[in-house]
Amino acid sequence: MALAYTVAFQGMEAREVEVQCHLAAGLPAFTLVGLPDKAVAESKERVRAALNAIGLALPPRRITINLAPADLPKEGAHYDLPIALALLAALEVAPAEEVARCTAMGELSLDGRIGAVAGALPAALAAAEAERDFICPAVCGPEAAIVGAVRVLAPETLVALINHFSGRQPLAAPEPLAPTNDGALKDLADVRGQEMARRALEVAAAGGHNMLMIGPPGAGKSMLAERLPGILPPMEPGEALEVSMIHSVAGLIRDGRIPRRRPFLDPHYGASMAAMVGGGRRAAPGQISLAHNGVLFLDELPEFARPVLESLRQPLETGETFIARANAHVRYPARFQLVAAMNPCRCGQLSDPALACSRAPTCGLDYQARISGPLLDRLDVQIELPGVTPRDLSEAPKGEPSAPVAARVARARAAQRARFEEREVKLRSNAELSGELLEEMAAPDREGRELLDRAAEKLRLTGRGYHRVMRLARTIADLEGREKVGRAHIAEAAGYRRAPLKR
Image (cartoon, rainbow, N blue to C red; front, side):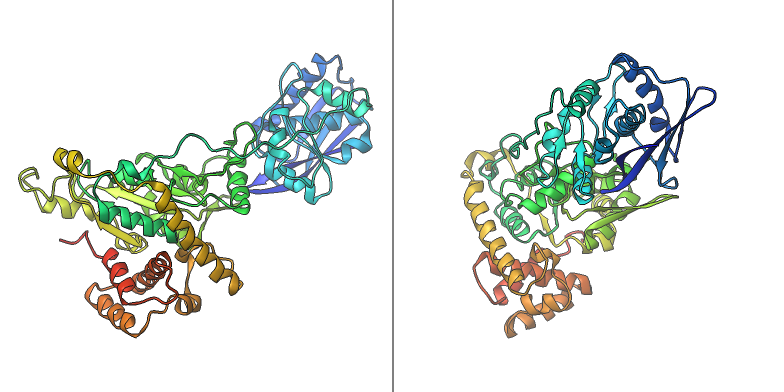
């Protein structure tokens, strides 16, 4: 019996799978067992054709391939290469000891080429943990090379891999590529007017707070949201690795380059539950996980299906999502910054009596009631944007560019990071503060506490809303370089917690 190793994915976790190949006397057969899905079951035909293409024929014997553990579901085409390697080792074409020291993944073409597969980065990490070499397709080599603790072999064809094992033509180790920054970021200078919204966007960026913008069509809601990535600090190496792991499992890493900028996703309001939170046949990550450590922008918020919106409540609190299946529970990280935008009513002109429909203001109340109170309570910053006329656009001065705003945001984030490191807590922004740590770091002075209590009573804040005002105030103080939260910080934070949906 010959052995090879590969991985099975459960969310971002790559679990080791032992590929066992047994040749026995009897009628010729090729049997694949171990709970394979349709794609894995078809791999025996791809393997047979690939071996024929390089001049090897399967012996007239009974071939059994077992994928252990047998109770772990096996999905995807990346099992082709390890099955082929186990066969080659059993046929003594490749050295069995060398093959058994490797974790392999790759899809085989009928002519023996090794095609790209998803998940090379987490698979390489699993190989490093198991102290094995890692074999992957050539196009996935730079991605796997990010893991410096593992030796990576990235052949283009099955023949090249056999030649490497025989010593005739050793494969060169692939090199990791520099992080990528796709395209130019949009600049806040393009947004004219809307000073309050610009300030709110800066506060949201500085503390990682969720944000809701309400305003008529053309007020600049989408423009502001699209410029948020330009004022956010770049990802730290650990954050970039987390994002790359998710994108690798989803098959979204291009050219083996890890991203440097924070993700920005803006799904259409017709997105399904599985598309948003993850799921489907292979329990793939959804939009909220692909936006991990970045921004999720939901335009036309009330147009999303109610169950889809309500499914965001738990990830907004915990920073992760669970996908329950009959045979497994899959977890994906989902700590994203939610930015939402909506019109005040279906026609969008509720604030202008000359343009509003005949059902105003009832149409606005019905339209806004599509957003549940518990979901609104999780949005730290809630602001209304006034309408913008062509005259406003022509006469308003050009706005402040993104660069100085990003510098202020970076200083505020640095202050937060220093505060967290001093207390040895693993938090990334003020938006994650809770419990005793929130009371310790964001407690206002006496005047601020009095104002906070009055605001909570007047605005009828829930306990969650009360704490979110404290987090916002802490961020505003950080933007000003203040160690203590004061009355002015509480006043501004409470202003962002106004209830614009009630008229």
